[in-house]
Amino acid sequence: MPPFYFLKCTNMAGYISTYCTVSRHQIWVNGKTVFEEEGTEKEVDEFLIAAHRHFKIKYPKFYKMDVLSRLAFIASEMLLSTDTLKNDSVNSQTSIILCNRSSTVVTDVKHQKNIQKEQGGIPSPATFVYTLPNIMIGEMSIRHRLTGESVLFISETFPVNAVVQYSNFMIDQGICNSCLCGWVEVSLNYYHAFLYVVKSEEKLVKRTIYPHTSETIQKLYLSNH
Amino acid sequence: MQPTAIIADNIISPLGFTTNENFRQVMLGNSGLRQRQLFGEEELSCVATIDDALIDQKFATLDTNGTYTKLEKMSILSVSTALQHTNIGDLGSHNTLLIYCSTKGNIDLLAYGTTDDSLHQDVYLYQLARKVNRFFKLKNEPIVISNACISSLQGILVGKRIIDAGLYRYVIVVGGDVVTNFTLSGFKSFNAVSNQACKPFDAQRKGINLGEAAATVVLGPSNNATRQHIAVRSGSCTNDAHHISAPSRNGEGLYQAISKTYNTLKEGNKEQTDFICAHGTATRYNDEMEAYALFRSELSHIPVCSLKGYFGHTLGASGLLESVVAAHAMLHDQKIISKGYREQGTTHQLNPIIKRTCYPMSQFLKTSSGFGGCNAAVLFSKVH
Image (cartoon, rainbow over all chains, first blue to last red; front, side, top):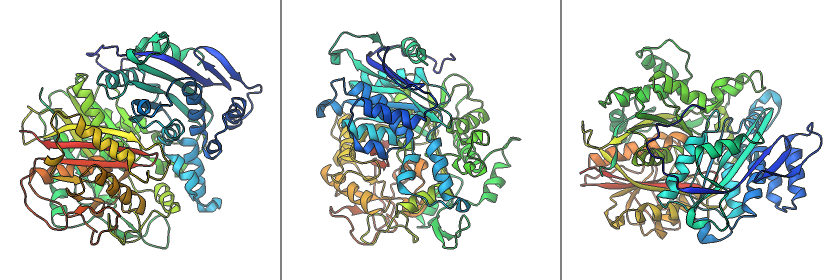
């Protein structure tokens, strides 16, 4: 893996408290399978709707979301509903760093078809709004009332060093004491989500799973890939 | 510790190809907005677009033999012009990072194909960023931020933090977006577009005008003095956690971003703020929310302007472009008229600048907000 940064700063500010992967119609949380769908010929949307039903999430807005926001939603639901993040003073202290490669290409194509007159489509605000990749952050924020900092990076591959360094920096500087980080990618024939929560030492409520370093994150990201 | 500063900058817009030319046009009260017939539509759109032929002409003066899209040419021209005003040694050293900020990049390329086989590689934002990166022979993989309309203001904040963390010595932040059928039709579907020149904060405002631009700041240590520098003092961003396409009614997210921006500084700086360069898109919702957030922040009396009446809404470029214009206004001790404003149009009264005045200034606040509920605020000041 090529180094992304000339590493001058090697402070390790955080600890990974929980992580999840959604890929190939399966969901793993902290390394264990929690859901899988038989029949991988199903579309990713069908799989996500099945997961939504299986976990009895009961969030009607889910059905308005596009596939990228749905994937981000399900992945974050695995982490945040089991984690102690439903407190207003805590929620302003939680940052979000999400990344992907294709931005919102699936919904972009949908909107593009709506504007090509020969295709007879009509542009719709409900589709257009999802042509911004940060909307999935907005959806998570609304669901879990997360009012802290958030950023979205576009990168060909998951920029592990950048994410680890930036989240550690924010925790170290007191900009946040917890960060939801990861990779949520949906392209025309592929999807993969890897999300984790990193917390400052003071904020851990249970024993740490892993220290927050590039090596650890790369390992967790690649397991179940 | 010396503050991280803007040591060079550039704007490529319908108002010119240098920061000085853009600033001069704004001071003259000229706007880049025009009525144009676009994308095979019969009705005219009010937009601020740059003539393709002019871009090609300017770009031809650079040493190049590749194929570049309009946005890539604008971006490369912008960075190239900005770098002429620095004395940064070897750009290819490990000390420089590029941050590219855009909402949709080369999305107009979707018109050529939307299937897996036919999708143009340059539709991917990281490809666009890499082409700019490669042009300047930068060695490090660029960072790409795509966070709706706060993208490039956030880019400045992220760049500053990266320098403060000691990870890089210089960060080149570029913001760019072009006017496309994709985005224009999308905003029209929201009934968010005005077919007349936009009127930020005004009682008669009817919506946005789209604009296109590429703008650059080079961030670095402020002792690199070839001219008066602009310090990036502090900043913050937040999420409303309210709605994906409408701002929170009480401006909570923006209010928090502004609060955190001032609170991270040792001395309370609010009263020393000489003016605010707001987001002011001229939609009913945004301007109302911004006025409320500024009221809650006890900044209503501070002179405020929106630059959307000069450049239109340049989406991913807006935060950075407008910060550069405002910074030069501060350097020249000149207040910029909030073009398009006549009469109070928000529940909470603001103090929009309606007259050009010369006034010694040392600090201004820039705000941005965007779809997805994101908000950003950054404080800039003269380096003493």
